[in-house]
Image 1 (cartoon, rainbow, N blue to C red):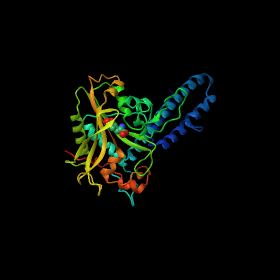
Image 2 (image 1 turned 60 degrees about the vertical axis):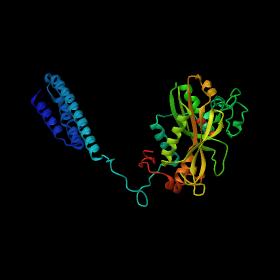
Image 3 (image 1 turned 30 degrees about the vertical axis):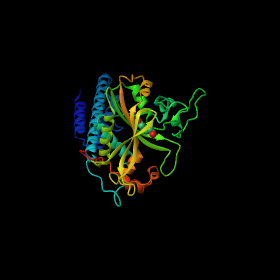
Image 4 (image 1 turned 45 degrees about the vertical axis):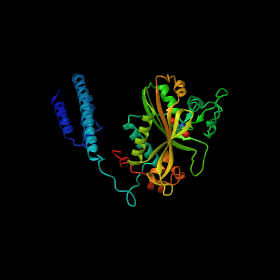
Length: 362
Ligand code: DAH
């Protein structure tokens, strides 16, 4: 390479290395490769070079042009990377900073809905007892919601359910599908899907065509199912007493089991807790309040799920989530649960950061 080209190369490389930012870099680039740049000028003068040297000079200039273009591009990439690093460092968010307190001056803060909170607490208590969470669809087949649970067509229990029926999708879609009237069909789905032994709870939405001060067409239940070879009524009682005392945070909460009837359990029991009818307070006061249904899974339900009732047995229960949330938090009316009134939500909602309202060590 001739001397003038060598020094142009060295000067350009030095200028690139010294360019602190993309703006300085662009000045270097234009000074070399731009319309009036140094290298462009040398290329333009090629015509004046004596014919016998022109070929060699032309090749050298083109080689230098490629080398300088590559060096310029490399410097651009390095400067861009450095600028990005600097931006990332200067714009870092400190997410460990606690938020400013809520209103009046600070930003609005959300809260956990009492239903979500109650279901989280159920999951925490039953989770500690080895229950997993199971789910099923809100739109159910007649078979899962009724027949498999030993509620055949024309059974009187069907009339009590105020069922929402879906319009049949086709003429063959008979009997029509329903909005599940309880979480019990997830017992069926669970038994069909996984082999016993099993323990699940099913917190979820349920639907009945009923609307007044104490009923909402959409509400929530939490189902429970425990199956093994030797589960007895004593396990059912112990499990539910422990749950209720932990959930309400009352170590000596009175709990009473009363014989009842459900098509899918035999024997069946309703469970009452002690409360004060006048004040609505849970715990003491001499009155009983019915709070959930339960029983030993009916042999026919086990058989409907392909399980041998002589090999497997267990208990099931179901409770209304709104009901227990209202009792626990002293909420007098069911309707505001679904009205999204911000004042109600602020009052009864709980902080996402607050620990679950559980009574430890009950
Ligand atoms: N599915 C019943 C209802 O909605 C509640 C229930 C009662 C569930 C007894 C159960 C049970 O699993 O064993 O009224």
